[in-house]
Length: 291
Image (tube, rainbow, N blue to C red; front, top):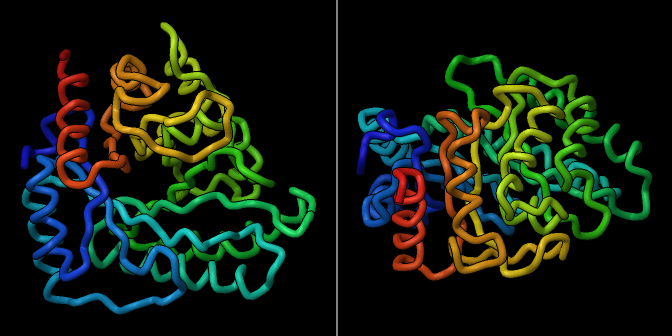
């Protein structure tokens, strides 16, 4: 794996870790030629909060530090801090606290969490007040130098989404007092599906400008680089391989020239298994390097 510290935008993927972070996750990352990686530390579709394997954690962290590999954790999909169901809201806090703790243990730079929806017909303001009540204490617990950032990932705009367009990050950040450990993970498929047309000569740069105008410089910490199976504004979260969807290759090339993405890793979450992932990582590297 190439030293990620030597490139403007390290490119990598989400890797499987069932069987061991070090023994399975790093092996998969090497096969992809990954310069960055993202992992789950719990069942993404469950509430369990398993303890890690200290030996695997230590070995994994040592390799990633030695090779300057940026690591990120994706929190479980069930988390929704806007839920009208008390049990879901409280479990969301417990689950995210676990992901943040495990993130620190494995040396992760950030923990990605979906921004959620205002369910049960509740007002956005009520849902955001609950976001504040549950999330702000978790952010305030991030007091160690090696604690990860909490990275908010907007959705494709389905249902009563709390955050899908770039300007939606504004009220979300305000609810959390623009906490210093708060950042953004921008998913290209999500923001495209939500209505930001990334195509054309200036689409990607215009969208990134809007994001910076909303949350400020330096808040973009990670990009989920995914093409889209559907057109802009379709509000459908269906990822496609890089260049094979409605976004196309050029916007990804443009993304890696915007000032806001300087030093920001790109992680793919695309279809196709190992071969498809390796091809997408290679494609993004070529686009970055002028190909």
